Length: 149
Image (cartoon, rainbow, N blue to C red; front, side):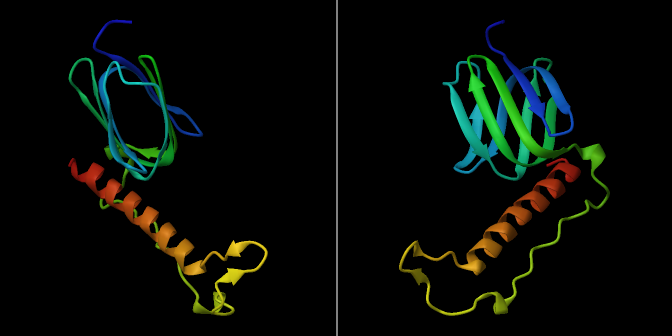
């Protein structure tokens, strides 16, 4: 492989969205934006909804709104596996946004948040808030990709 480039595969459950040589990859990870350049250390990371950006060897920008997944970097190979990916052309105008999850206060049966056997109980509101946050990130990514930002 030629120096100064990466071999990128962007894959969804249904298809290979992009495959080819690029000079950089920018991804939305759980720890923040991640930039992968040639010579990057081996890596396996969790991705969250957001904007995926890459630049091919001819300087063309590749942009998708992506919905969670993983990235694997080995040598000069980058495999990005996501649940879904939308290009600007695949998004409606305005983009169809995912609905936020609903929270039902009746789901909380009591105020005791501990379980003697299993430690702290999971708060149903925490789960709804996390789901809402991930939906919001995905919706923002769709808007940014459609607007060309």
